Image (cartoon, rainbow over the protein chains, first blue to last red):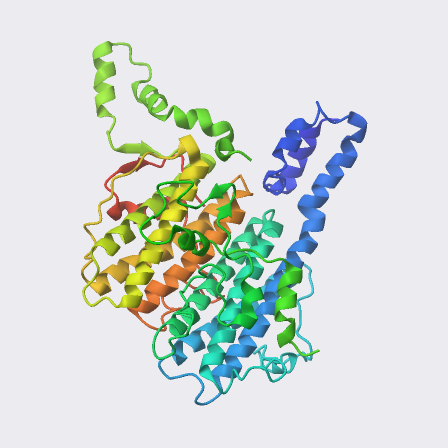
Length: 290
Length: 225
């Protein structure tokens, strides 16, 4: 059996085979010397399943998690933007742009998931819309069992918007490892995540400045693990991490780090952290109808 | 994984850059006089960024050196009419860009390009609008640059940490953009009709940095989309 020949044959029909198997290059090198010939077909089978079979399902699953977030956000902004007197006219154009971008994300993700042979997520109480707009207010309880009043109090509207956007970023961060084998979807996930992060910064900047002047003085980025209000602490757990990929971003580790202010604060804010699917779903569960 | 493993098989070529290029230029010339003439024709500022992953990571490292220097200058010479909030946040921006810069320097190890010489004379730091215009340009470039690099990187594991910086730079981008023009989140060519952030190929990104850097780079082996 000529393993290299097999790969060459696959490359003829799928030029990206080496890319899809990347990260397993060391394994490939090991073949022939370390793996007994009899075990080779099993080892190869497992490797290709990771690169192709299993990953397709996992990729669709990752995209569906993103889609679930987009439905929630789009419905939230559309409801807010259409509640007279809630959002000041000075900020309304920004929120309308964000609403349009969330809607674009929904349509884009539905198209992508369908093209991959997956079934796009639909929110609870979703009925096939007669209009194009995927607006599903019946799926959500944004007042969280009468705890919050986002559609009658702008400050509260902003707090929930910040939490949703930051959690959306955490959710996509958490899916990046799953997407490493699919360059196209990986890039799209980055592109969506970055737009969500722009939204988060938009909301946070409004909360920072007058007339809101939120008490925790939010920054456009997540400084330490500071939540907008104490009940949302769990939405920022782990955001104060300072070690990444073996590099510790602290002055004590590297004198080139900024020492003038607070290097630890910069180290935490310079990276957004990943949350896994279970964590993310538990965070948005209180805002969904049962 | 050790920090220097990123270079993989490319390490030797990059470390021996100047010698390799020197030999290429001198190639086949027998006479000593001509040999030294060739040597002098090598531009002193033509810094080789490497190839493959090393080149891609050096590109991001160069970008971060520019943004860190840019905000360092901004903090040293506040624009006229700056608010207390803006003072604090531009210090944040400087510090976070330094953290990113040092991250790339660290993972590149001995393959990192040597410290480069900036030329920020294109920026009027005293003028709020001019400073923010350049800040928006640089932050938008940073975000789009990641989107190009991740498609080309062979070491996929590096992408996990790059993602963590990409969304933070998107936060930076929206902050400076919004400080210049409120509600401008979706303006321009940065977000397309699918709601996706734009992508810039590494060589295009390098050329956009030209006006901020005096050092010239040899990017002949920098991967492109």
